[in-house]
Each structure stands twice: as C-alpha cells, then as structure tokens.
Length: 270
Image (cartoon, rainbow, N blue to C red; front, side):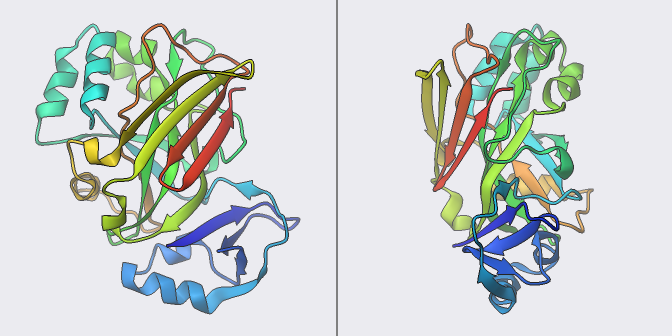
C-alpha cells in the first residue's frame, strides 16, 4: 500500500507519497496510467521529506466524485422508511442496474478537520460513512479513501427527484485523510465505522464491513464507466451500511468520525 496525501503549502497544493514530496507529479497524472504502472512512477518522483504542511482533501479540483446508493440492506430499509414512495428503493436494491449519482466536484470536497454542514432548509441530516474507490482513467480500481456522504434525509424522502438537493450542496462531501493505493482484493473486507460526538460525549456508534455489500466493487465501477469517460480518473462512494436512528439528526458543533480500513476522517459540523 502507498499512501498519497495532498498538502497546503505557501505556493499552493502539493502531493506527497509516504511523507515525501512528489516532484512534478500529482494524482491526476497517476490516474492517467494503468494500475501496474503507478507504483514505479511514484517511486521515480519521490523527493524531500514533508515537513508538517497541513493536509487537504486528497482530490484535485478537476476530479469528480460520484456515489452509489442502496448497496447495503440497512440502507435499503432506511430509505424505504423515510420515503413516501418506498417501493422505489426496494426496486433499486433488487434491480440489475445500481443507483449512481453525481456527488461533488473536487473543488467542493472538504478534507480532514474541515467542516461539513447541514442544509439550512433541511430538518433531518445524517452522515453516511463510505468506502470511496479511487479509479483510474482506464476504469481500474487503484485504491481507496474514507468518505462521508452527508445527506438530508427529509428532502430526499419527500420526493426521489429531490436527490441532488439532498446530496449535493456546500459541505456535503468529505474525503480523506489520504488515498491508499492498493489492489482491489485488499478492499473486499474492510471495516467501516462511524462515531458521532456532541458536547464531548459520544451519542452514536455503528459499524459494518464492505463484505456486507450486495453489489461488488467491480460491478459498480463497470456501470459508472458504461457511458462515461473520466480522463482525470474518478472517485466513487460505494454506499453506506450504517444509518443512525430515525430520531437522530446532525447539529452544528457535532463531531463526526469515519473510519474505513486504516483511514480515519474527522469532521466538525459547522
């Protein structure tokens, strides 16, 4: 596994690998390569040791973040309960074609320690901890990150056509702390955890595993690339299997921690 991180510097964002600067190279360049070419290219570009520059979201502004829905049984049940047209989610869960939707452009993604948000016109917003696939321009899964697909459940539940408003707004997508480059078979059983603190006390904790997904990672990737090309590579959130209780909603001042595999993403709610 190779950890790629993006940092804030005095001359702009810069990428590093395993704590060393990448000279003349960033993630967009790497995702133009085939999977078996990436490690050697990273090794060639390694430079000086990173000296404490703060982390940014591990995406470039030209990357796209897409998302999958209803990929876990728990997610199907929660969506069915919240919606006035519940059979829509039952059909998606059982259908051959998965639910895929655009989540965020790279420039709008929040990184480690940056605030996520509750929509001002929403009354029921929840975090959704997810494995995020990192996919190259050739449709090959090359690694992963941890992600939070913040969602306004009341808006989506009112009408499925409101999905973009429930899912895509400032502060609704967080990724990080890094991109872990690894083979796809290393992702099949990753643990996923969510914890939420309010006033310094933990008020919710849940866990699941990628192994609990109904759909395979390769299936989701294949559908995303059927009629779309991604010359800069793409990030794909793979759905959530952890849903807080129906009475729970995020509030300003909460702290959300998402753990996926070896990655921990902490986000205050602003």
